[in-house]
Image (cartoon, rainbow, N blue to C red; front, side):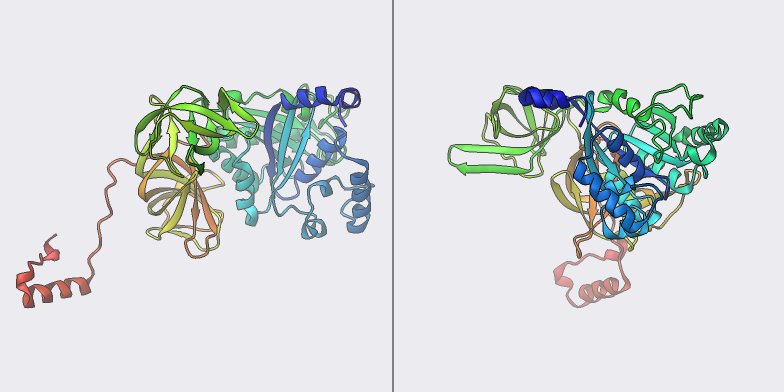
Length: 469
């Protein structure tokens, strides 16, 4: 498979130990329609020797059947597995693939380029740390390129690699590469990316993907795979301890544990924590896993925490350190990606899920929606399918969260339709909204008439005149 194959044959336990300690990087490919996202992933897997012989045979057979390319096999079929995807030669749903090199492990998400599947792209981007944004060298920066770049920026991805693909279709012209590079830099000035790299490639021919290309000798930088192996994302992760309780494990009278996955930070036995929203303070008595007890747990580990004191902690509560408290409020501001045909409307009640905590709430106001072409803000009364905007929300009880820019794991929520139970929106919390008290009830004419009749015929009830409130 990789250069580690010899170690697999000689000492499988040593290989597994090395593999276990590798760093994991989650990446996605995105961009406009037919920019070559699926083909790029196929090329990465093929040139990295990560495709089995039976997979190759199946791909060659399907390539002849669907005739999507003139080559012996279509690398895009490695990730485009749905029947409709293979027939049309497009990506519809998010496809996840795993591969590794001697340096690190990767989970890569292939996301669709069509506008109607923008919600699928946002889903894939929500867990990724780096984005490969493909641009067709023949067409340059497109509307979907801008849309996907903006979503990646809003979802907290700081590192992007702009892969200018299909250089073979423009005769590996350096001027084309430089113009697209200039255009994208101008567009992305106001996005929150901290690290932007550019690389000219041909996913179909393999130029500059895994191996250096003689056709692009004028490019002085690294290949795409080398960039993936060397990019550092550790500084983007929050150090604050956050543990959202997902389940209370009570198998007998002698055991009560609180199960969940560490969203961020780390915790040790003996550390002092606070349970929110109650504010009760206690210590970590032990950290239990399937494989035994631990002295320390880190972000991403699924554990059961046993507390030193018998305090009330339930599903949806959060354990934090006393000096690292998150926000706790009923009112918050968030950027929203809307994912369904029925638009987001002000004052309609939805189910809101923040981590493992479920509450009800509604949008108090839609502050603005974003024009993807120029990133300008415009007034709006609703958000339609695939539109993005900024809204104020109110929820029925206080929720605990961080600003999304500081902690992606605890700074987001999903919006669920109460009737269909369908996830209709994804939101990134920006900040709490101060001074946003309970919404005033609008008094109807019918209520005024009924109030007047009650005061006239039943004065002993002491009903107040609501028209004066």
